[in-house]
Structures are given as structure tokens and as C-alpha cells.
Length: 486
Image (tube, rainbow, N blue to C red; front, top):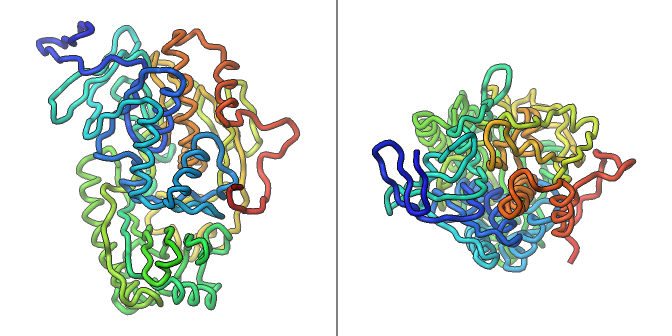
């Protein structure tokens, strides 16, 4: 392989160079947006490439329009982003944080452009450019054909670790003992819902819903909804033939943010379909999942319209632009974060963020076992009232031993299956992205091995990210859920 500033030659192929940047971010989801903004703000010439025609990834394309920690717990880039989104009336800041998907897309693009980063949409990262154990860019494919982007540092925020895997970085898929992966979901947005009648039913049937305060939120004044339950409704639907009795759906989950004037004509996201035994990196599998998920969603919409108060005149507005995938590859990085680390409150010299999550403990959340989620034996879905926890996240979990100048941020970072239920969520992945972008900008300027970790940590602290849990402070505790201060 020969690389020059104007072209790349691989065998008999000559590929034009489309861009030469300091930092290339591959993937425009939550982690990628944060990484690109952080890198650009720290002075790096930055390019973000994204396969879709919009940013947000799971937050928009998969229609997972919700963060499940209180707004008061947000720090760093996630806090800045959602504060701005709320100011633009695109998010609710309360016990949980739902958002409007279209507002999210525009705010993400605005912040990226304002930071000085470039973006290239409708573009796939198809092949890493490797030389002597170092990544020097990627081959991209889009409507302009096949081109190369050269970069001093590459950040893989694809969610599936596509760039890292192609570069030869070892990885694990799914649960370590058997490779099983969490179920996938096709989301649906349902419109024309009367939230007043919806809430009245919930208030009069408390036994039919999750016992956790964070999963029983119907705040009509704030317009915020996040509710898990309707167990008896699903059981009735299966008993009466409205739903296939063998379907692996045992409860209904809704979220959304609606202005008060829309209370009687609200839109909610339905996150209830579950498609198991799917490898999100396998084209045939994800095709099968799309087909099965849409069938499940069709049945769920019928169930809602028939049995749920407030849904009598509802209808399906749209479905997620692409499949919601919870788990695929996780790289084997320089350090693999374990559940034991979280449980004992491990501190790391190279921690680049203190992350907050719902404390699921050892419970399996969205587990790979067919049909378990939401079933009568699922303690998490039915009975658990959950605390919050904080944990430190080491930079080494985003670095590899095999490839220089490559960072991996998001759910594909180096952690175990029983940790990703804490660290794959959107506030933690946003902080991973911010840390990766900050480090990448410094590395582009000073060299991959020329940055003291304290320099990186100081930049992050400056930008609102706590990087260490103070000695003596518990990492896990019950906290009052509250909104973000004005």
C-alpha cells in the first residue's frame, strides 16, 4: 500500500483522497457527536462521517428517544446538549429525559457545525488504512464513489466496532460464555393518544406497572412520559388472540415528551418489540429482525388501540429508520472494565469520566434469553426499585494494544457483557465520546504517546466532566430524582 496526500494505492487500485484531517470520527451517534464536537473545540481539524442522512444513531434513527437518569445527573457534553435541546423545546428535563427525534437531529448538526467540525453524511467507513500497526485513515464509500480520508487519529464510534474489527483488533460478541446478544427492537411512534385517560388508568392500576420510580413517570405538566408495565393487558391480548401467545413480548414500554396543549393528542414511542437470536453485524439477521419486528409492532398497535384507555383513536405515525441493536462487538482493549470494578467502586489513574447509571446490580437487563424480559420471573421488570450508581471509566478501555492512533468509544468499548448495561447508555457513551475527542485532538497535536494523562483529565475537568470519584464518597447510593437546575 502506498499513501500520498492526493491518493492511496492498494494493489492495482488508485483511490483519490477526499480529505486529510487531524481527527476522523466514524459514526454519528451519541458518542460520535460528542467526540467530533470535543475534538473540534480543542483545535483539531475534524471530520465526522455518518451512514445516514442525519445524526443521532440510536437516539434518532433507532428512535430510542430517552435517557433514563435524572437530568440533574448530567455532566459535560450530555448536560450541554440536553440543556440546549430543552431550550429549543425538544427535550424534557425531569426524572428521565425524553426528546423529540427531529429536534435532536437538528440540534446535533447545529452544535457540530458551530464547533467547527465538518460532517459527511450518507457515507460508510468501509476499510481502515493500516501501515506498520498504525491506522492512517479509512476508505469511505458514498455517492461520490470510493475515496480515502487520511487522519492523524481515528475514532471508531460505529457502535459495532466496525473500523476496529476491520483493523484486526480482537473483540468479543455478546455474553462471554455463549456469545448470545441482547434482543433487538423495531420502535414505533404512536399518535393521537389521550394522556389524561392514559394516566388515569395507570394511577388506578399501580400493581400493573414497574415498581421503580424512574419507570413510572407520567408528568402531564412537564409533558414527560416513561412507563413500563401493562402486564395484564399483554396477558389479555395473548389470551384473546390479539397477540400471538408465543410472542416474546411480556409488557409495554412507552416514552415521549409532548407540550401541554397536545395532552389529548400526544405522540409516544413504543419500545416493546423484542427480536432474539440476532447478530447485529450479520446482514441476513438484521433483515430478519426488521421483518419480525414490524410484525410484532403491527400487533402491538392493534392491542393498544383495542385495550389501552387513551389509545382508542391512536395510529402508527412511523417506525424507526433502522433496527435498534443493543449489543454486538466489544473490543478487547488495554483494559476491560468488569462488574467487579463497578461493584467495589474501582478508581483508575487514567479515568476520563465519572459516569452515572441506574444501578441494576447483577440483574440481567434486556437479557439474551428468549422471552425472559418482562415475564413473571423477571424481577427487574416487575419488582425492583432501583438506585443510582457512579463509576469511573478508564481511557485504556477505549484504546487497543494492536493499533496505534485508534480510539473506540460507545457500546463497542472494552467492557464485559454485565457492564455494558451500565456503560452503553447514552449519557455514558456521550462522555466516552467527549473524552475520546479531547484525547484525539491533543494526540493529533503532540503525538500519540506524548500526552500526560493529567493533561487530558485537566481539559475534561475544564469542560465540565468529573474524572474521579472523591475518596470516601460512595459510588452507589439512593438519590432524590430531580430536574436539571436552571
